[in-house]
Every structure is written in C-alpha cells, then in structure tokens.
Image 1 (cartoon, rainbow, N blue to C red):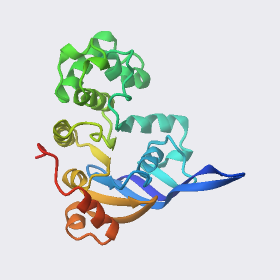
Image 2: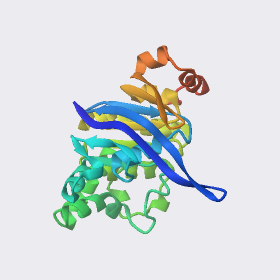
Image 3: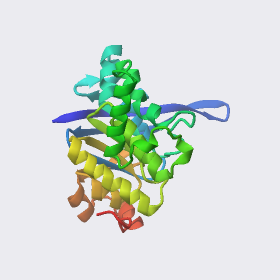
Length: 264
C-alpha cells in the first residue's frame, strides 16, 4: 500500500543572473511511490535534488508544480489539523548529528520535545522520563544520558539521540537524509545496523537518502536514482545494482564499490 505518492513534482527557486532574475529548477518532474513497510533508497550526487524532494515530502517546502500525497492527503493543501496529524507520522533524521541537537537542552528534553509539542504535557514529567528511558534503550543508550547535554556525547551517540527523538511519536515514516555521512566508517556501520533493527521492530517505512550506492543497496527494498533534479532510474535494489540501465547509475556503483566495515 502506498504511504507516500509523489506526482510530477517540480521545484524552482529565483536566481539572480546579472541584472535578471531567473528560475533555477532543482527538482524536475519527479514521480515516485513509497510503500508502507519498505525502504526506498534515494541516491545521487550532491546537488541532485534529493534533499529538496525530501523537504517537499515533509511539507517543509511546497512544490512549484505537482503534488505530494501522504496517506492520500495532499500536503500542500492539507488543513492545519491534517498537517498536524501527518507530521506525527513523518519524522526526519538529519545528516549532521551535531547541528541537529539544541546544545542548551539536556537529552531528556530533546527526546521528549516532540511529545510535549504534539501531546501537551505528554502525561507529566514522570511519564515523559519513562518514555525517554525506553526510547534511549531502543537506540542503545541508557538512563544515565538523560541529564547530559549534546556536547558530552560522541557523533555516533548524538545520532542515536536524534533517532530516539524521531521515534518518540511512533511515526510510520522516517526520512533519513545522509544519516551516517558525518560519522566515521565503523560508527556509521553501527547506525545502519541499528536502523535495520528498528525497522523490523517497529514496522517502519524509510526514505533513505545517500550518495553511497552500497549503503543504499544494503538497506533498501527499492532504489530511485536522481541526477540534476531528475529521476533517471528506479527498480528493485538487487536487480538495479546487478544490471543498471543508466551510465550514471553505473558510475555511482563504481565510485563506492565496498560496504563500510561492520555492516552486516
């Protein structure tokens, strides 16, 4: 069943060229479906439009043309109540685990912030603490982290905290935008294996965005390849990597031929 339907979306921004203002298109006529329970890998080089497409799915950016539907509802025209509900179902995990966390907040407040925003008090301080402990346990951290601040953690630990926060509302879809590219190889491999485990445990749907074809192949059910804002190839992960149709896809496969150490 389709959880997300992207229908012929375009996104253009004004761009100053000398004395003229022109439109620069960053996403061009992209259509794709994300089915419930699968991982769709979105792969391409920097500047290919991957993050802009993800932001349109999250409802952070409106398409210039076309539509994005989540559970059948058009994000761009959804009512405030519909958008509030849908945003509980979709949560992002960003590339930079350092910038994604508020340095002034402790881990308890970071992890439970979505619960407070979307559910008021979340049941009181004691209930929030219990929920935070459970979330941290799911990502491989313990209760001792709750009173600490982001600067006291390594990059991999910070990304685990980001994932715990994303899981707080028990969403259906996680949008993972280069979630390991800022981490060293071994730590990134641990995060990838954690994501696989969490997907099985919670029946999550992932949009996994990366420039690394081996990682995308390892984690994904299907793969969509973007180049210069356009979707150039899609297919089942194993079949696409074994027999890529486009030269650009073959280039991405050749550029990073091995999985990171520890991914298994």
